[in-house]
Image 1 (cartoon, rainbow, N blue to C red):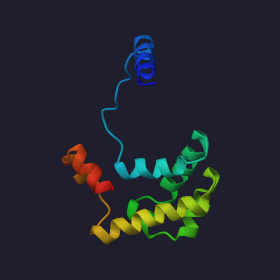
Image 2 (cartoon, rainbow, N blue to C red; image 1 turned 90 degrees about the vertical axis):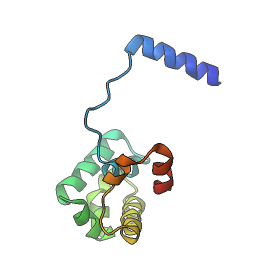
Image 3 (cartoon, rainbow, N blue to C red; image 1 turned 120 degrees about the horizontal axis):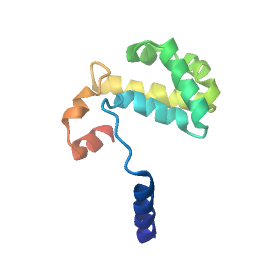
Length: 120
């Protein structure tokens, strides 16, 4: 199986090339929230839910302080609003317990092993 995957990867690279990475990497917390919203829905609906969150809550602190039920209403289009809003709230609650403020920029200074340890 591994050999097939490697072969397919080579064929895709030879046909399409390697996509350029963005010069500015997305914020890790935004990426995590977008990933939570993408569960069991299509890209269009998860993107709309993400945009709704960004429009309603201008800062991560504002989102972190929002009630779970408010978040649920804002992300409803992505489906599973109760579960996803609870996951987002639990994530922020655990961040607040361990850190004074919500900021993952420190992760940019860590190597992969340290990042994995921090996130798990």
